[in-house]
Image (cartoon, rainbow, N blue to C red; front, top):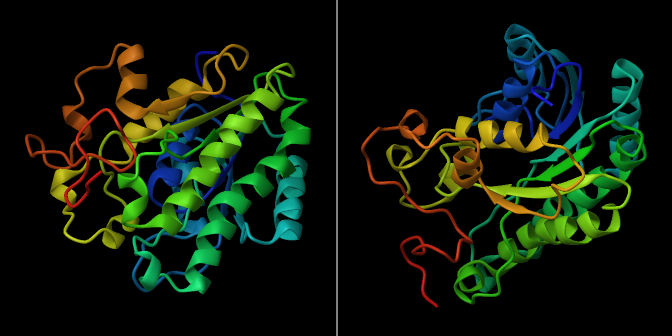
Length: 282
Protein backbone atom coordinates (compact mmCIF):
# COMPACT_ATOMS: atom_id res chain seq x y z
CA UNK A 1 0.00 0.00 0.00
CA UNK A 2 1.37 3.38 -0.98
CA UNK A 3 -1.22 5.46 0.85
CA UNK A 4 -4.50 5.43 2.80
CA UNK A 5 -6.79 6.68 0.04
CA UNK A 6 -10.33 5.43 0.61
CA UNK A 7 -9.42 3.80 3.93
CA UNK A 8 -11.54 4.49 7.02
CA UNK A 9 -9.80 5.34 10.28
CA UNK A 10 -11.53 5.37 13.67
CA UNK A 11 -9.31 7.63 15.80
CA UNK A 12 -9.91 8.38 19.47
CA UNK A 13 -8.74 11.70 20.85
CA UNK A 14 -8.62 13.08 17.32
CA UNK A 15 -9.78 16.63 18.05
CA UNK A 16 -6.26 17.89 18.83
CA UNK A 17 -2.61 16.94 19.30
CA UNK A 18 -1.22 13.65 18.06
CA UNK A 19 -4.63 12.23 17.20
CA UNK A 20 -5.44 15.17 14.95
CA UNK A 21 -1.98 15.05 13.36
CA UNK A 22 -2.50 11.38 12.47
CA UNK A 23 -5.93 12.22 11.05
CA UNK A 24 -4.58 15.07 8.92
CA UNK A 25 -1.77 12.91 7.53
CA UNK A 26 -4.30 10.27 6.48
CA UNK A 27 -6.63 12.96 5.14
CA UNK A 28 -3.95 14.13 2.71
CA UNK A 29 -4.20 10.68 1.13
CA UNK A 30 -7.97 11.00 0.81
CA UNK A 31 -8.90 8.84 3.80
CA UNK A 32 -12.16 8.81 5.76
CA UNK A 33 -11.76 9.82 9.40
CA UNK A 34 -14.10 9.18 12.31
CA UNK A 35 -13.12 11.85 14.85
CA UNK A 36 -13.90 10.24 18.20
CA UNK A 37 -13.65 12.62 21.14
CA UNK A 38 -15.54 14.22 24.02
CA UNK A 39 -14.57 17.67 22.72
CA UNK A 40 -17.78 18.84 21.08
CA UNK A 41 -17.68 22.30 22.66
CA UNK A 42 -14.68 24.64 22.99
CA UNK A 43 -12.57 24.04 26.10
CA UNK A 44 -11.46 27.12 28.08
CA UNK A 45 -7.82 25.96 28.15
CA UNK A 46 -7.41 23.47 25.30
CA UNK A 47 -7.72 24.16 21.56
CA UNK A 48 -9.85 22.18 19.15
CA UNK A 49 -13.17 20.36 18.98
CA UNK A 50 -14.46 17.50 16.84
CA UNK A 51 -16.01 20.15 14.58
CA UNK A 52 -12.86 22.24 14.09
CA UNK A 53 -10.97 19.00 13.47
CA UNK A 54 -13.54 17.99 10.85
CA UNK A 55 -12.97 21.29 9.06
CA UNK A 56 -9.21 20.76 9.03
CA UNK A 57 -9.55 17.19 7.80
CA UNK A 58 -11.88 18.26 4.98
CA UNK A 59 -9.44 21.03 4.07
CA UNK A 60 -6.62 18.48 3.88
CA UNK A 61 -8.57 16.32 1.42
CA UNK A 62 -10.24 13.77 3.66
CA UNK A 63 -13.81 12.91 4.61
CA UNK A 64 -14.64 13.61 8.26
CA UNK A 65 -17.28 12.26 10.63
CA UNK A 66 -17.23 14.14 13.95
CA UNK A 67 -18.48 11.91 16.77
CA UNK A 68 -18.93 13.08 20.36
CA UNK A 69 -17.89 10.01 22.35
CA UNK A 70 -16.75 9.28 25.87
CA UNK A 71 -14.87 6.01 25.38
CA UNK A 72 -15.72 5.01 28.94
CA UNK A 73 -19.29 4.50 27.70
CA UNK A 74 -19.35 1.18 25.87
CA UNK A 75 -22.84 1.74 24.44
CA UNK A 76 -21.77 5.07 22.93
CA UNK A 77 -18.64 3.46 21.53
CA UNK A 78 -20.69 0.74 19.88
CA UNK A 79 -23.05 3.35 18.41
CA UNK A 80 -20.11 5.43 17.12
CA UNK A 81 -18.66 2.38 15.40
CA UNK A 82 -22.05 1.68 13.80
CA UNK A 83 -22.32 5.32 12.66
CA UNK A 84 -18.86 5.09 11.10
CA UNK A 85 -19.72 1.90 9.23
CA UNK A 86 -22.99 3.42 8.03
CA UNK A 87 -21.16 6.52 6.76
CA UNK A 88 -18.13 4.89 5.14
CA UNK A 89 -18.99 1.21 4.65
CA UNK A 90 -16.54 -0.28 7.12
CA UNK A 91 -13.50 0.33 9.31
CA UNK A 92 -9.96 -0.40 8.15
CA UNK A 93 -7.90 1.11 10.95
CA UNK A 94 -8.43 1.73 14.66
CA UNK A 95 -6.12 4.24 16.36
CA UNK A 96 -6.30 4.29 20.16
CA UNK A 97 -4.86 7.68 20.99
CA UNK A 98 -7.17 8.95 23.75
CA UNK A 99 -5.43 8.97 27.11
CA UNK A 100 -5.72 10.44 30.60
CA UNK A 101 -2.63 11.47 32.54
CA UNK A 102 -1.74 12.39 36.10
CA UNK A 103 1.96 12.37 36.98
CA UNK A 104 1.32 12.06 40.70
CA UNK A 105 2.66 9.80 43.42
CA UNK A 106 0.57 7.30 45.32
CA UNK A 107 -0.41 9.64 48.16
CA UNK A 108 -1.30 12.43 45.75
CA UNK A 109 -3.50 10.42 43.37
CA UNK A 110 -7.19 10.55 44.31
CA UNK A 111 -9.02 7.34 43.50
CA UNK A 112 -11.28 9.32 41.17
CA UNK A 113 -8.21 10.18 39.08
CA UNK A 114 -6.91 6.60 39.31
CA UNK A 115 -10.24 5.35 38.00
CA UNK A 116 -10.30 7.93 35.18
CA UNK A 117 -6.86 6.90 33.90
CA UNK A 118 -7.69 3.20 33.96
CA UNK A 119 -11.13 3.70 32.43
CA UNK A 120 -9.80 5.82 29.56
CA UNK A 121 -6.38 4.27 28.92
CA UNK A 122 -6.71 0.54 29.55
CA UNK A 123 -10.46 -0.06 29.51
CA UNK A 124 -11.17 2.50 26.79
CA UNK A 125 -8.53 1.03 24.48
CA UNK A 126 -9.88 -2.47 25.03
CA UNK A 127 -13.47 -1.32 24.51
CA UNK A 128 -12.79 0.58 21.28
CA UNK A 129 -10.65 -2.24 19.86
CA UNK A 130 -13.31 -4.79 20.73
CA UNK A 131 -16.02 -2.74 19.02
CA UNK A 132 -13.94 -2.18 15.87
CA UNK A 133 -12.62 -5.72 15.49
CA UNK A 134 -15.68 -7.32 13.81
CA UNK A 135 -15.26 -4.76 11.03
CA UNK A 136 -11.45 -4.92 10.96
CA UNK A 137 -11.72 -8.66 10.43
CA UNK A 138 -13.53 -7.91 7.16
CA UNK A 139 -11.04 -5.26 6.00
CA UNK A 140 -8.35 -5.76 3.38
CA UNK A 141 -5.38 -4.56 5.43
CA UNK A 142 -6.61 -4.06 9.01
CA UNK A 143 -4.57 -2.31 11.69
CA UNK A 144 -4.95 -1.39 15.33
CA UNK A 145 -2.41 1.17 16.52
CA UNK A 146 -2.15 2.14 20.19
CA UNK A 147 -0.26 5.24 21.26
CA UNK A 148 1.44 3.49 24.14
CA UNK A 149 4.99 2.68 25.28
CA UNK A 150 7.17 -0.42 25.22
CA UNK A 151 6.57 -2.55 28.30
CA UNK A 152 9.27 -2.33 30.96
CA UNK A 153 9.50 -3.36 34.60
CA UNK A 154 12.20 -0.85 35.45
CA UNK A 155 11.25 0.68 38.82
CA UNK A 156 12.05 4.20 37.60
CA UNK A 157 8.99 4.18 35.35
CA UNK A 158 6.72 3.37 38.31
CA UNK A 159 8.15 5.21 41.30
CA UNK A 160 6.99 8.73 40.40
CA UNK A 161 3.51 7.90 39.08
CA UNK A 162 2.54 4.27 39.68
CA UNK A 163 -1.13 4.80 38.80
CA UNK A 164 -0.41 6.43 35.43
CA UNK A 165 2.19 3.83 34.48
CA UNK A 166 -0.22 1.00 35.29
CA UNK A 167 -2.93 2.59 33.17
CA UNK A 168 -0.63 3.37 30.24
CA UNK A 169 0.90 -0.10 30.28
CA UNK A 170 -2.67 -1.43 30.11
CA UNK A 171 -2.79 -0.05 26.57
CA UNK A 172 0.50 -1.78 25.77
CA UNK A 173 -0.71 -5.09 27.17
CA UNK A 174 -3.65 -4.85 24.76
CA UNK A 175 -1.05 -4.81 21.98
CA UNK A 176 0.81 -7.78 23.42
CA UNK A 177 -2.32 -9.89 23.78
CA UNK A 178 -4.38 -8.87 20.75
CA UNK A 179 -1.43 -9.10 18.35
CA UNK A 180 -1.05 -12.76 19.25
CA UNK A 181 -4.79 -13.39 19.37
CA UNK A 182 -5.53 -12.02 15.89
CA UNK A 183 -2.26 -12.75 14.07
CA UNK A 184 -3.67 -15.69 12.12
CA UNK A 185 -6.65 -13.60 11.05
CA UNK A 186 -4.38 -10.93 9.63
CA UNK A 187 -5.12 -8.00 11.96
CA UNK A 188 -1.98 -6.06 12.81
CA UNK A 189 -1.88 -4.73 16.38
CA UNK A 190 1.04 -2.45 17.20
CA UNK A 191 2.12 0.32 19.57
CA UNK A 192 3.79 3.60 18.71
CA UNK A 193 5.63 5.86 21.14
CA UNK A 194 7.71 9.02 20.65
CA UNK A 195 11.45 9.10 21.36
CA UNK A 196 11.12 12.63 22.74
CA UNK A 197 8.43 14.61 24.48
CA UNK A 198 5.87 15.90 21.96
CA UNK A 199 4.51 19.45 22.09
CA UNK A 200 0.80 18.87 22.78
CA UNK A 201 -1.79 20.12 25.24
CA UNK A 202 -0.78 17.27 27.55
CA UNK A 203 2.58 18.97 27.94
CA UNK A 204 1.05 21.24 30.56
CA UNK A 205 0.77 18.17 32.81
CA UNK A 206 4.55 17.76 32.96
CA UNK A 207 6.15 20.29 35.34
CA UNK A 208 9.19 22.13 34.05
CA UNK A 209 8.91 21.01 30.43
CA UNK A 210 9.08 23.68 27.73
CA UNK A 211 7.84 23.14 24.20
CA UNK A 212 11.17 24.42 22.84
CA UNK A 213 12.70 21.10 23.94
CA UNK A 214 10.09 18.99 22.17
CA UNK A 215 9.18 17.72 18.75
CA UNK A 216 5.97 18.42 16.86
CA UNK A 217 3.09 15.90 16.68
CA UNK A 218 3.78 15.49 12.94
CA UNK A 219 6.72 13.16 13.65
CA UNK A 220 4.35 10.69 15.30
CA UNK A 221 1.81 11.16 12.52
CA UNK A 222 4.36 10.39 9.80
CA UNK A 223 5.55 7.32 11.71
CA UNK A 224 1.95 6.16 12.16
CA UNK A 225 1.31 6.60 8.43
CA UNK A 226 4.34 4.44 7.64
CA UNK A 227 3.09 1.69 9.97
CA UNK A 228 -0.51 1.80 8.76
CA UNK A 229 0.47 1.50 5.10
CA UNK A 230 2.51 -1.67 5.73
CA UNK A 231 1.01 -5.10 5.10
CA UNK A 232 -0.81 -6.16 8.26
CA UNK A 233 0.35 -9.74 7.98
CA UNK A 234 3.92 -9.92 9.16
CA UNK A 235 3.90 -6.49 10.80
CA UNK A 236 2.22 -7.06 14.15
CA UNK A 237 3.09 -7.17 17.84
CA UNK A 238 5.66 -4.38 17.63
CA UNK A 239 6.40 -1.56 20.05
CA UNK A 240 7.54 1.04 17.56
CA UNK A 241 9.46 4.25 18.33
CA UNK A 242 8.68 7.17 16.01
CA UNK A 243 12.18 8.10 14.79
CA UNK A 244 13.16 4.43 14.36
CA UNK A 245 10.15 3.90 12.09
CA UNK A 246 11.11 6.92 10.01
CA UNK A 247 14.70 5.70 9.78
CA UNK A 248 13.37 2.44 8.31
CA UNK A 249 11.63 4.61 5.71
CA UNK A 250 14.90 6.40 4.90
CA UNK A 251 14.03 9.58 6.80
CA UNK A 252 16.94 10.51 9.07
CA UNK A 253 16.91 14.32 8.98
CA UNK A 254 14.40 15.12 11.71
CA UNK A 255 15.18 18.81 12.09
CA UNK A 256 11.83 19.83 10.58
CA UNK A 257 10.03 18.14 13.45
CA UNK A 258 11.74 20.18 16.17
CA UNK A 259 9.73 22.97 17.77
CA UNK A 260 12.99 24.91 18.09
CA UNK A 261 15.65 23.56 15.72
CA UNK A 262 18.95 23.03 17.52
CA UNK A 263 17.47 22.97 21.03
CA UNK A 264 18.22 19.97 23.25
CA UNK A 265 15.40 17.44 23.11
CA UNK A 266 13.83 15.91 26.20
CA UNK A 267 13.55 12.11 26.15
CA UNK A 268 10.09 10.71 26.73
CA UNK A 269 9.14 8.34 29.55
CA UNK A 270 9.36 4.55 29.39
CA UNK A 271 12.40 4.17 27.11
CA UNK A 272 15.08 1.97 28.64
CA UNK A 273 17.68 2.52 25.93
CA UNK A 274 18.34 6.18 26.71
CA UNK A 275 18.71 8.42 29.78
CA UNK A 276 15.60 8.93 31.83
CA UNK A 277 13.92 12.35 31.96
CA UNK A 278 15.09 14.68 34.74
CA UNK A 279 14.09 13.56 38.21
CA UNK A 280 14.07 9.83 37.49
CA UNK A 281 16.14 7.22 39.27
CA UNK A 282 16.31 3.43 39.25
